[in-house]
Amino acid sequence: KNETLKKYNEATWTWWWKLMTPIVLENIRQLNAAGGVLALGTDQTQGPAVHREMELLVAAGISTSDVIKIATLNGAKFLGKDETLGSIAEGKLADMVLLDADPLADINNAKLINTVVKNGEIKFQIKDMGPGISKDNIQKIIQPFFQVDQTSFTKGFGLGLTICKKIVESHNGRLSIESKEQKGSVFSIHLPL
Image 1 (cartoon, rainbow, N blue to C red):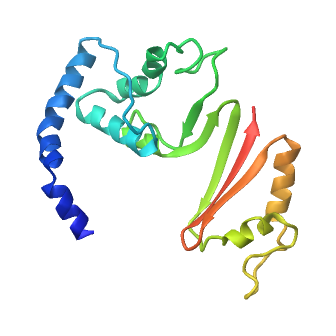
Image 2 (spheres, one colour):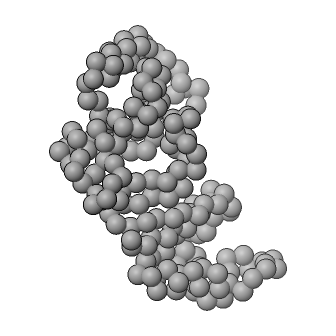
């Protein structure tokens, strides 16, 4: 860990970005203030990079409401898809996230994603930080009466996920499970709208 930090601090681009970031942020702030249409999008348009870019836009002095517009509607405008994407309105595709807190109060609240709606499907996730489930047991866990922990007395009958899967499938949905041993599990329910 210390070696990585040392290499990072010695890298030429590190000092360059420390020098240039305030200049870039001020230029972006001025573009927004002048009415320019900014769209969110880094080389890595994935969660962490998108959230970091939103943080930097706020740090530049752009309001959280403008940052949310930059991250949603303006991207759709840039792609020529603002008639169907980028905002919530009747007749538009329902691609959105439901958050556990207000991003207008703090842009970091955009990381508190509760539910995702994408491509006509709603996705709920239940996460735990438990011992995880081995690859061998992932498929077995949805079988009736199967319990991962068979070394000690556990409450229940091993039917919870079996019943859950049946209910989800009866609504034309699917249940998926991702798990890493010693890290926890994510149980996802995908339902069509």
